[in-house]
Image (cartoon, rainbow, N blue to C red; front, top):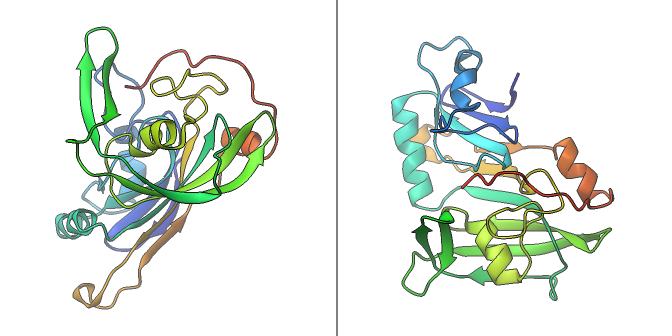
Length: 232
């Protein structure tokens, strides 16, 4: 069962577990579609994901419960109104306590490595605020990220190229060591709703750290294992 973090007539925010793809992977595997009957919760229409989280990434995912709400939420994301908070565990400790990473991103691909995002002057603008929460045993650190833009793999690239330390377990922008998945968690989501929505309160959701993430964040030794397969 997927935990519901927020529910009303037009929206659900779920706590997406790591390993669950938002869209059905071409190579097969579990996806949000497998849970649609549960997530209908008495509604005839299936809810639709408004945004995306990587398969490895856990935490807050917004679903729209009707086409009108989907259109409104899509516009809100285009206007950068949602307030998104992520927690990541880095394979190192930043020199500063907080800052802003502004690195434009572009997609590249090769037959050997598949596709990935890279910093590029002519890429799409990407902006992420970050704050060091605390150091963790083994030389890592727990960092809070607040992205203003929503580029693909934005936090993962900004961590590796902007802060100089990839997320632990990231097989694409790091060495994949230290965890069985990329250590990124969407911990909070706030969607402002104004008078256009008839004065409905803002959507506010908080997702607790999953067990594997909390273990590393709270002091478990960082293992020297390797993530078996990249998510792409």
